[in-house]
Amino acid sequence: MKKKPNIRQKKSLDRAPFPKNKLELHPRNPHKMRYDFSLLADSCAELTQYVVKNAYGNESIDFANPLAVKALNKALLSHFYGVPFWDIPAGFLCPPIPGRADYIHYLADLLADSNDDLIPRGSTVKALDIGMGANCVYPIIGNREYGWKFVGSDINKIAIDSSKMLIKSNTNLTGNIQVRLQTNKNDFFNGVWLANERFDLTLCNPPFHASESAMKSESERKWRGLKGQQKSTLNFGGQSDELWCDGGEERFICRMIQESKAYHDRCYWFTSLVARQSSLSAIYRTLESVGAVQVKTVDMAQGKKVSRFVAWSFLESDQRDYWQDTYWTV
Image 1: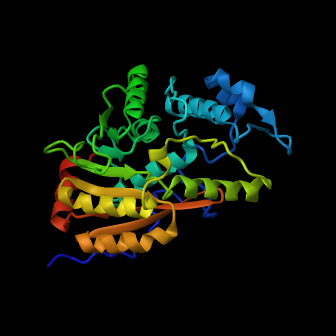
Image 2: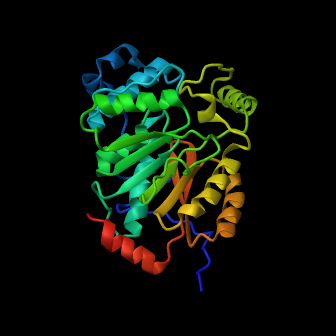
């Protein structure tokens, strides 16, 4: 008889002492400490023009300035990940690197938890990034930190072309990351998952908001709380399909779960970030309805922002044993 999924299981998975402060980044995240802007500027001279002294006399940048945030990302990717060239088209999402790295490190722990506490590394591990965007950040970090191979998909042709350019411009990424255009905006895996292809992981950072108006209202509310004023410019940018979709993240993730069942024996862990805790109830119900065998919810945090991802698997015990013995090396 198939085991019922433990849909309420919540477990923090790390192979190092867990942060005493639950708002800290993952122990292996190289961005835990305060930025050394002088050192980072050595990796990206462009950053120098944006470094200023803050109210406490410390070096910083204006995080409300999209150009400063972009220059910081260039410096971080060059200094920590050996990626000397990185850029994105105007108006596309410029993601905060520390939070992106956290998701990757907790995914490594998720695999380790299924592999006798050892993180599977190297090119035998394959991951699929749904909605990679123009920045290609998740595949870059995952490949440079753990040697995993990546496939990234997106519905936006400009985003696909941008990621292809990034890969071509950095020889250490060439051959390690593939990109595929999703031609049907209603599909997640169909059309980009090749026949007989397997993935150890899928990951996704879904559109958060249900509409453009909801996004603007939320953004203005946050800025009023932080600055006492409204702000119309998004410092991290983003195209419409990166920021909102009909039904918001809850409907997006539930549809992804339903489609994942067709690939039940070709992936070990399906995962997705979940920004709103209120989305979890519907997600758990959908996972139960499709017969997920294992479900885990992993909490993460960065500063005052608390997030999480949900992971699910359809593999039975004997299938998990075979997967571990056949595909994973350390």
